[in-house]
Length: 411
Ligand SMILES: Nc1nc2c(c(=O)[nH]1)N[C@H]1C(S)=C(S)[C@@H](COP(=O)(O)O)O[C@H]1N2
Ligand SMILES: [Mo]
Image (cartoon, rainbow, N blue to C red; front, top):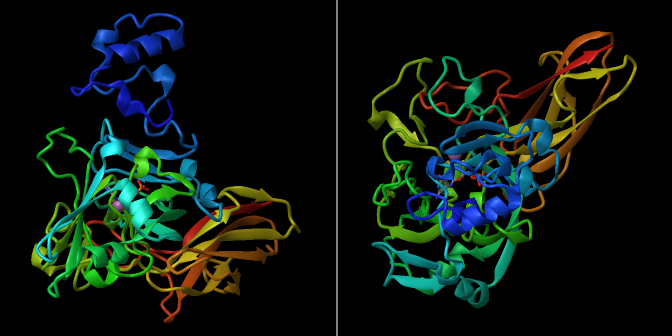
């Protein structure tokens, strides 16, 4: 039953007769008021929802649509497993996915002629590649902005770095044939608007053609060596590392090659945009004064220990985590136990491939008993470091890359 909650409902969102039989059999008794279950609801005893395959310690920020955050200590794996991957949906997970007839269409003003591909075409006609890619929500860190901004209050866990397998978008576009005037791409996915109106777009974003044609921009059908989980875009997903994750379109069915900046849902207005010029916190300038977020800023996370550790005096504290820097690499990682007065260099590894996060480790010694914070600070290859406190405030609460802090009590 894993991952298939949507298949339990009919087109109108009510339990199918067949599903009811299955659930009754599993429960060993009948569901007395089954006909009164709200649309899209399963008996809670089954816990079949997008989280059915998720680690129970993830934090649900919203369930309509699903927005689920991974606490920092659960990001400890080198490669993020499916059960610890954050979820960010803008609409409803598509229902009744027909994999056998799934078609990817490439169209738009800047293709010579539109072309379609079956999943099998993609898997057999092009060379597959596997990359580990940082997928970080543009709103990750929003909870740290003051004054508060609207939107899901992500702390630090709206980020993942899984291994994605698929084909290079550039190989596919070479097969389609582009015109010289291509400037942007835009994706379309099969998810439904919260209103359930199929004509209402949910989200349709994209990137400039240069980013689209990078080696690591892929159309993926597998994550960590298995089919992509439903909630993460099954059966096909665009994966673009290093940029706001909103450009990595799930449940992908169409990519438009545009002769202008893509103008799909959440591409315009103030969505995924920040003011061109710094603003005083709390000031919301007019739409024309915003620019699209491109590469994400340098950032790091402490994944071990979990915040709140009690450490016996005299014991060395081993720290570890990851660091990443959008399109750039991370050059240095430092840790501090004295609120940023002094910094100690950590051991930092190279990324597995471009646009993957980098692992770091450090050992620190606390001098006396008492309360400490461990701060981690990454510096990218051009020397830009994470701010120790809140960076430039922006009205939508994007790209907060302040140092991650954990609490440690030496007893
Ligand atoms: N079709 C579709 N793609 C989407 C979204 C969505 O709502 N619909 N959300 C985007 C946003 S804002 C984020 S942060 C990532 C989240 O990816 P994940 O849920 O697999 O972690 O998916 C992106 N791709
Ligand atoms: Mo996002």
